[in-house]
Image (cartoon, rainbow, N blue to C red; front, side):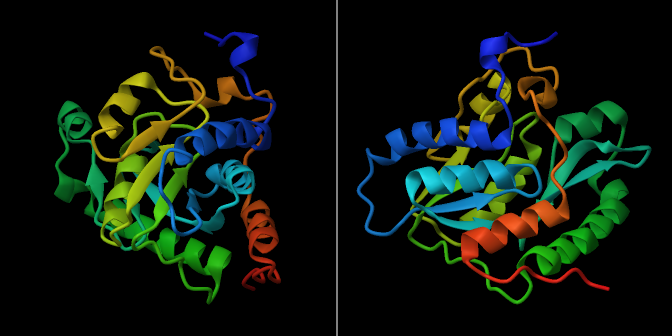
Length: 230
C-alpha cells in the first residue's frame, strides 16, 4: 500500500532537512555546553544525517552497523552489530524460525569483517568522534524492526553520552514504542502503524554507494576523500 503523496519525501536530503527542523525543536529544550553530534548510519542514513547536521549546526560523524541475516535469507535481518558493540538479536524472530544465537556465529563474523572494511573505507585513519558528555543524534533514513538501531544505541552507551536521540524521517510506530525505552527521544516525521516498505516513502530511493558516503564525509570534514583501496 502506497502512503499518501503528502507523506512522501523527494529524496533523502529533502527528508533530512525536514527532520533537522524537528530535531532542532527538541534540542532547544536542552541546556547544551557543546555542539551536538550527529552520527549517521551508512549507507542510507548518511545523506539524511548530513542534512540534519547542517540544519542544527552539529558535528558530523558515522556510526557503522551491519545487519545479521538469516542463513538462508541474508537480507532478512534478525540481529545487528555496531562499532565496538556486542551483537543484538531479535529473540522473538529467532524463536519463530527455530534458530539460536550460536547458529548465527558465522554470520556475525562475516559482518564484523565487512564492518571493519567500511570503517577503513569511510573513515581511514580519522578517529571516531568523542561522545562522552555530549548530546548525540543517531540518524538513519528509516526505522523498520529497530534491531540495527538497538545495536547502535548499545554500542554508543558505552561512551557515556549525556543525551541520546534517535531520528529518522519515517519510523514504524511499533518500533518507536520499543526504542523509546532506550533513548532520551525518538524523532520522526511519519510513524505509520502499518509499515510496509521504507522505499515507498521516498520518490527517489536510489541506493547510496560507498562513493556517495566518502563524498559526503569529505564535505563534512573538509578533508580529502579516502582513496578507494586497490
